[in-house]
Length: 274
Image 1: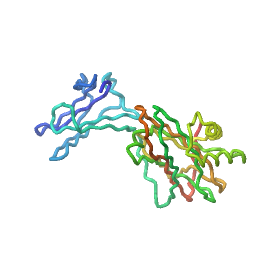
Image 2: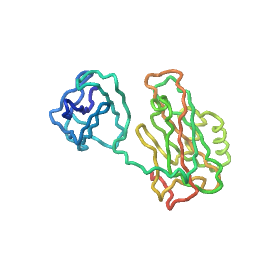
Image 3: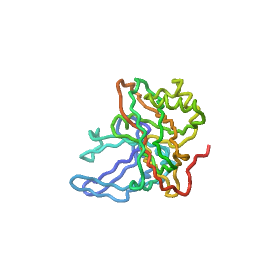
Image 4: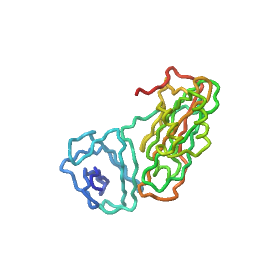
């Protein structure tokens, strides 16, 4: 737990307590000289202990880590007593603490378009895998009003690091033939496969990005990403960064993106400034 910023709390003999600590190694946490966490409320029953705590984003304390909108790795442990020991019930999660809560998309007015990718990871620490995708044959312009990444298995949550969705410019019959040929394949290494590399050069329009800890993205009620603007299918390149630090062999799973689309066009088309 070296370099960890730690808060410890509980209810002992009916009295709540909280400690602001930090980690210096794989041993008992060290109590900070400056106690910056504030206990707002506490309760305990036969099965649960609930603590509500708060702290300023940046305490200017060298023993504390600032709270910001970067992805933060949480580790946690729960014990049956108030003794500081090696708890058997513990885990971790990646969270964007200050990620704003998005309003849920109105599923009743949207249709789902899924971009699925099933890949067997090589026994490499890092893999960038690219796949081609084609929008459904909608005959009129639509708006994409939300995105969600498919992380339905433990493997997908453990090994999907980030992904980027690019829109391609099908400006010639030659490019369309290239895109269609890649659509018939499971994809390839983004920076080594020649066909994928040639496609990437023509797919520079950023549409959506996701990284570990991010929630689904739902656009404001008056904004949508244009899709099939001219009543014809469009082509996209999905770049996924797979993380396999232990270089485990034989990992295979499906991930991808769910896009929510609607024919109820919104006031503004979304765009990205570069």
